Image (tube, rainbow, N blue to C red; front, top):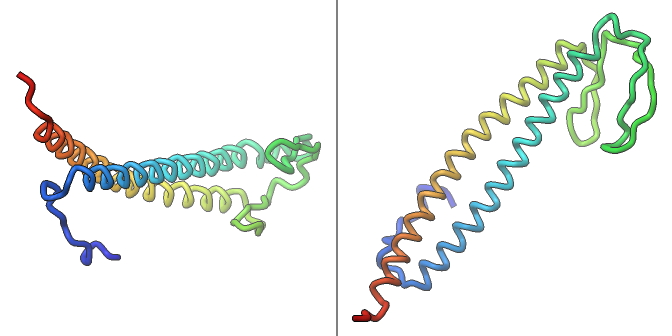
Amino acid sequence: MSSEQQKTVDLTTLSAQQLADVKSQLEQELEHLSQSFQKLRAAQSKFKECIGTIVKTFQGENKGKSILVPLTSSLYVPGVIEDVETVMVDIGTGYYIEKKPKDAIAFYENKVSTLQKNLVDLETIVNGKMGNLRMVEEILRQKVMSSAPNVA
């Protein structure tokens, strides 16, 4: 449903139970968005790490040097740098392409930039949801306080 089709609801007209349901839904959405934010940050960090590795590894003086080549996140095998003019770049879903180091760096910098834009957009959404949650919590608190019996 697009934002134009969504209708606004006056929160003060909702019952305490309905407000609690809205609060719960907002909390779940915030949890999901926060997890997504962390995953985007982690991906951005990995791309930055790739840039650093290319800068350090693919220089002329490193040709013929021994390195450890990662096969998985915890398994490395010994290798030798034979070619400092090209690098294999993981472009996703198990596909690799050969690029010159400067082109590979540009590729990863583009990924980092795109993720940064997504993070900014996501942060705006999270802040909006947090504002909505605070509003719901405040109205819920007021409803609970007004329905509580007055003790003298």
